[in-house]
Figure 1 (cartoon, rainbow, N blue to C red):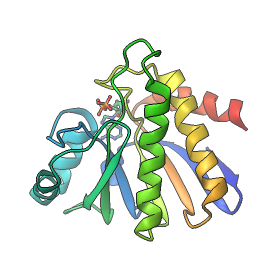
Figure 2: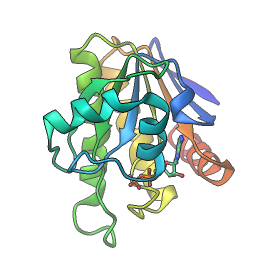
Figure 3: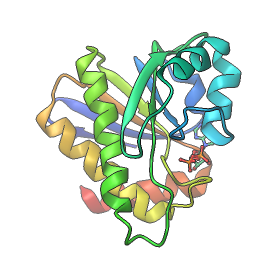
Figure 4: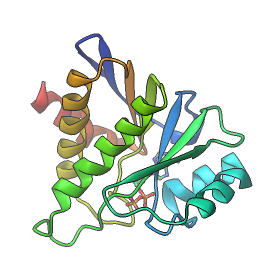
Amino acid sequence: MQVNVGDSILELVEGDITRQDTDAIVNAANSQLRVGGGVDGAINRAGGPRIQEEARRIGYCPTGQAVITTAGDLPARHVIHAVGPIFQGGDKGEPDLLASAYRESLKLASAHGLASVAFPSLSTGVYGYPVDQAGRVALKTVRDYLTQHPEIKRVRFVLFGQPTFEAYARALQELS
Ligand code: ADP
């Protein structure tokens, strides 16, 4: 499923983020930039130790921000480590922090001259963000960024499993 945003493409696929050959893939990181489970574990297993070595040198990333490293052995060129919020009911600034994690990731891609970025569904695993709500925030934030930044040609959401894919598909239909 895909939509055009200006000359750029916003697309949804069901799949595994580690297999994407976009210029960057985004990791659902924690502030300590330590290897965890979920997307993070999968990226570090598939990409080898260089990713974690670089992340350890950077050391820390606040919630709502992002940092960039090599992609090690992965097909992508870079990993952007974005820290989404832990969901605590929704009235602790979570939507703004989640939007910020997406926006800051895209800003890093623009700053590094990267034209294609693949995102997982940030915060909807261990961090507990309800996927319908998270999908709406994610897609609106990315759509708005692409409207202003035609240098990013393609953003792909790589959604793990059919329920997550369908939640994002509904959110994209609502938005467009
Ligand atoms: P967070 O800590 O931000 O919640 P998680 O990594 O626990 O991040 O999960 C975020 C989302 O990514 C969940 O929907 C999870 O099912 C999904 N996910 C897990 N592994 C992969 C993968 N290899 N590719 C894409 N998405 C994945």
